[in-house]
Image 1 (cartoon, rainbow, N blue to C red):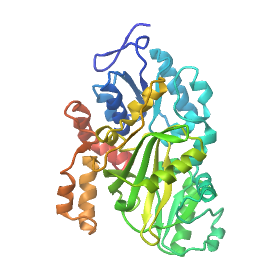
Image 2: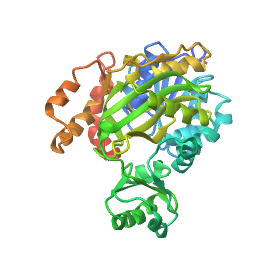
Image 3: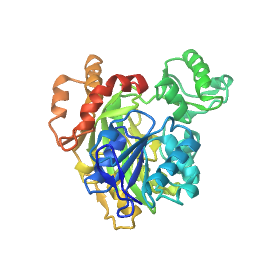
Length: 402
């Protein structure tokens, strides 16, 4: 097949080198492109938004689709792109939860053309639906926030813990896109009832969870990140979310630092082993000062927002997964502590809000930038995505509130 030119004037030579097809070209997808592109691995990105990844020097080709939210649509988009450019044997990288779910249910079909690191639905269902996740956490004895699953508003009287409450969807995709919120806070039972009626209009009956609110902002949130295979981590990293936006229920990190915490590794590996997981993963915890426990509250079976931090810390996650998919040896490695990541365009407003809320001192903010640091988007070796992002800010605010 002849080489296919892209917008950067490069060419794809699918018969000569295996590459990566990345679904989603926001800063997560950009991080994957840079991880692989530094090694000369070709990358194709598809998206249904105007995204910065398509402007990267490492994007061999960028394809825009009208909609990549529905499972059947994204699977067909991936297959059609693979056939169009002859991407036989290329590795698939999803960057969204709904893409992970779509890939898991179309595993056999996708494997006729691609290498598919995403596990099948029997594994993915334990992260996709938080009702499944919390049932398993209880069985495994892993600490988690107290959680109640009401089938209707009449069940709310049976909640056996006191407010404030966190009202969140069991399956976050549709709720997040409709409300631009990860969760809602209810300070009383009356407020919970009102919000519950509104939430079910978005998520559907029986699809909301009520949890106890663990006090504290983003500084109390930690993540165990890994390339997990055969019941153990080939590559691992523990990170603390120092700043986030929004301040209370952060949809995304804005400033993160690697740390050491063996207990998170123990809990994270126990969960991942139980679901027979393979691939890249972020397991999120929050430290509860009331009982001095780290409590697991979310699992992302894909690349996460700050995964590009790993390269500077010694664990280049996308590249390691790519090597493993090609059958090459991956030596066990751990991230160094004290390395940081920042997404400046969201961290500046989040920091300003943190200062006014009394959560952050200006001196602390400036000290936080005086460390080995990875910027999520801007890179002197690949500057165009950072420049384009500034122009796209109004669009990004409109689409997702950053």
